[in-house]
Length: 434
Ligand code: DLL
Image: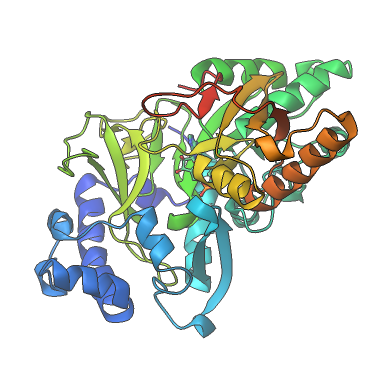
């Protein structure tokens, strides 16, 4: 049996969980219907009224929401309350440059931070711990989410944000960090950097890591655990639902418990939209049960995974999801940042290039590499090195301001990128993530 942050709810009987969900869903649907015109219109179109939703069994009557809806409703169309009741926004990049903007009331923040606190305690965290948060702070949810969770648990929090590995290592060693929160690829990189500086795994005081925001494998887990001398726990979430902490791993490390008192999960067939039984692989769909600022009903995550309700040895009763096994769209996660090929194409066209390009992603020394090969158009062709370098730099900067990360740009001669007769193969992803 492990430790819990909120034992009563984390180990509640299935009947109790269902009772809570049934009570909350009725309230949440009515709330959304009354406050969010965009969703009210969708419900009206489907002829569903709030009174039709009496329990979570009725959720299947509700319309889905997709990233496209979020884009269409940008920025305020899905807001659930007056802006004056909101205290924060977070954001993530979306397709064609429009961002997803999520709003939080203070209650939303408290709920979210509690979810993260559950994850920290499940990883062995207590008020004795020193928790080093090196997810990015800012619009990205990783930093603030784990930071808030760490405060709730009472850990001494090191709000490092991402990057500056020398400083990360100095603080980790000098201030005896015991819990590390970052992306798994950054954790692996920190492990490697420690070894390069002559540290052995037993030289640091770390005992656990809470890693997520991108896919990672069991092999990666072993590498990280060995290089840092810790137990590595997975954490999952998305900006739309609040951020990290929608689900998290316990000591069994065989799937991520979903915080079911706040998020109702379904698995659907992405083509037919049919709800699939536990154990079947499909697209994960979330319904928030008590959000105020940005409540989302039946939000399609595009993440593929499997749910299981098998008894867990940790004593938690909440349903578990597998690690995400892929996505139904073409979103890539590069160095923790969500990137769509359509964004890259938009920049190229805006900068006067042809849409003949290829994206290459790889992982070298546990860090993602990100290269884009772009054809010159015949009019701009040049064989002057300085001019080429200048253009590459400009394009890199334009990409960085759209995507949040700068790819290495390689300008190549017109017609040198292979043309395809069917679907163009724009992305070559050499990382083995699933
Ligand atoms: O990545 C929130 C987060 C921050 C989660 C820190 C965990 C830790 P977004 O930037 O909106 O939010 O990206 C959400 O990232 O739909 C998944 O495809 C992917 N993702 C998140 N966590 C995991 C994970 C944050 N543990 C998208 N494993 C999601 C695999 C993950 N993929």
